[in-house]
Amino acid sequence: MLSEKDIAEFQKIYKEQFGKEISKEDAYAKGVKLLRLVQLVYQPITQEQYNKLQQRRKEGENNKNNYQNKNIKNENNKNKGIPK
Image (cartoon, rainbow, N blue to C red; front, side, top):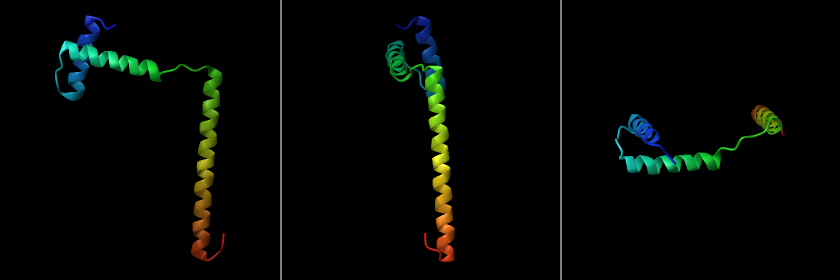
């Protein structure tokens, strides 16, 4: 699954990131686990799916802003003694 070159590159990156050298066996095992994780998590999406995701994010931001504005208004009214 991983070539000797891949293992050596993983060892190099691991040392750079964690300041610790690891054996080829450990590098292979960790590299395979990382690849498997990426395979499980990464899932390409279509343009239509991407557009829907962007729309949901936009709606979520709008809802968040509306909620915050409502809370600010309620807090201001409370400070002025105005009921909700």
